[in-house]
Image 1 (cartoon, rainbow, N blue to C red):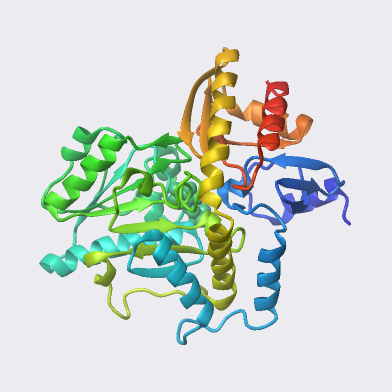
Image 2 (cartoon, protein in one colour; image 1 turned 90 degrees about the vertical axis):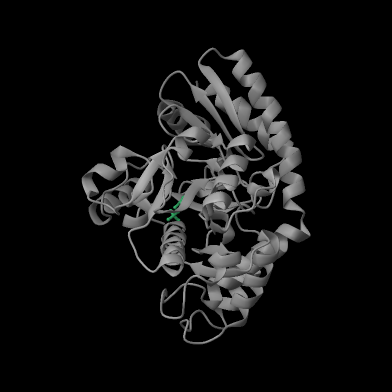
Length: 395
Ligand SMILES: *Cc1c(COP(=O)(O)O)cnc(C)c1O
């Protein structure tokens, strides 16, 4: 194996520098643990940014990948393949939706959702120029369409001009949404629980109000469940906790447990808005990634992952409440299930770095002052206890 410093040095030479990475080279994983190139063990409470829901190196999952890899990886969407049907059926059932389109990432799922919104409005009145309302402090991805609906000036500024007709309301402020609605508005897009923005769940009043507003004005409600979906909230999709169903939903991250796959799902008029020829992808929904998603969905059901998340999420909640009580530097605690955040009165980056390098605990920040806890969904109470110990040592 290459030595660590050599790997890092070579990486800095070849990889386009859009990240400031931590000086750690991970080599393999098992359960909720990662192991670096020197064999050191880390407790993982980041899951590769909310991706590895089933943890690492799950035998049943790995076996399904191996089996499909030896059979067929890719055929293009000019033909049918069985894993896409299997994964699609399971996903639609879990999401109570009618149609699904598989993508390669979250940002592409958002692109698809935006196209549904535009096409839906075009079908309705035969002209373009429609407007979409998104939220401040949101995050929807890095491609230009998704960046256009990401309410973050810092991300947007160097790449302007972006998509026209996007207006930003304040999350959890229904009046701020109402003020932006006009006869050109065709859709409202938001995360059910804002992730990158600092772990802010939608209030019930807000989500219910936005749904009602969409119904009154014939607008689509589009919920981004890329981070908070796939069991993380304690429900398969976070909106199921609120009983507010979207017209369009995006998923990715934990859907493939590490294999790159996302999806946009639709029901009602949104499910038939786009026509053959309107959208496509070469890789999207290929047999390999769909076999992965199919197995993930099967294992979620078989192992009753959402029930486990409800229980262990409650335990994490108690522990973090106590942590915030005991530490003056911790000022707030938000979230649900296994998507929780603690806000500090100083930059979270220092704590995250110390946790990683000195205490071998993988954490991720969200915004500048928030640490988000998005571990593999299969963690145990002992893992939570261990995490809190390590976190305390990292302050
Ligand atoms: C990560 C994320 C995205 C973008 O997904 P990528 O796979 O990185 O393109 C979009 N929306 C939300 C809420 C996310 O957390």
